[in-house]
Image (cartoon, rainbow, N blue to C red):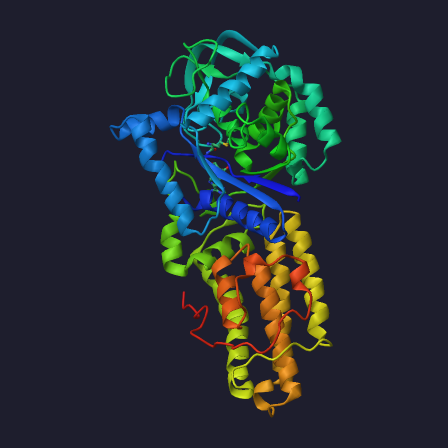
Length: 502
Ligand code: MSP
């Protein structure tokens, strides 16, 4: 059975999650659900990044110890993900013992392999980024290019990772694995950064305590990023369960925002090489959710709590909007008009309307019993094309294209009904053929909607009289035309998506 191991970045527990975090998590969840539907063995990992200065300062500001603080915050991430119907298989907290064990094993291996040495370091450090910057990378006034706040001068004795030793091997890796970083523009950005020359990087701290202790020198803790990146191998048993690790690595799919490209596409692959394991098979880089043209972030005021949106619009419409309107790889502006527009056009007028009209006419012309589809329906061909397009799009990590294809089938089915006008015709085989085919489209749609809108998919399935749940079926096999058995009770029920005013 093919394996699909998908990860999100682990989020800083500086504050409660906002819609930007939800964007990545919903996309990862949808990809995981798609792969489960395709019959793959799936492991979906998310979690929280709990060490480092940023978190320690947030705790201090609340008068708490870092652990007290993270113990309060991590459950808020879990609650936000439960609210958004996120079905992760594992939630990692970097304060867990399993993580300490894997970080120490992983970095000791790199140390033993001769790629870690001790030296003095001074530099310009951005605490919100947890990253040093070179002077020429800063904005005017010595400000961080991401946060636009002043960086701090830090000087300390550090252990260094010999990143400079990996320039050639990284270039070879990029060349041998053209799809390792997608989209291509991001691959090129990472590759040209490597070709521009790599400097060794400081990976430990003596100035703070809140981190994983360096096993060979307990004056030091690992710098938060080098602890955090290791989470991806902790979860599959690195240094603790070799068989499990070998089963899942390196066929991983990391989903990340574009601001952490260097960590995932340069530092992390180099660390893997230094530890003697393969770099990750795939890093998929996505853009930012913007509000008023600015990146939604913890350090700005433009945050939206995912729970406020799900309370207002419903869970599946929020998921649908995030997946459908902001293609993975591009930035996208969030607005109330955007979500309402998408809701009314696609969910109320196209999907909801199709279900309502089919259920009504099955009620009035077929006594509420769903007829079997017409094997010769023109929609059979459309459905075949749409399923193929959706399989290709989801397989390529492009949910918006998968959903766009799905809506083509719904629109064509609405058009077919408008042309045939079964509501005006006498009951009989012709009406049954049209309605049976529309029900078959709804069955196939329910399957295609499992990754994006799991509750809607289940409800659609139930309303057209099918037993079980769509996520127990398999794609593409169960999407072949003719699967709707006919003979079940079709329920009209309340509108799935009542039209919204704004
Ligand atoms: N803790 C590090 C990641 C360590 S991974 C080994 C971190 N955390 S974070 O809380 O800042 O989360 C960053 C990630 O959250 C981004 O890479 C992205 O996946 C997601 N997003 C946060 N804000 C976002 C937007 N405004 N838009 C899209 N994604 C956003 O960096």
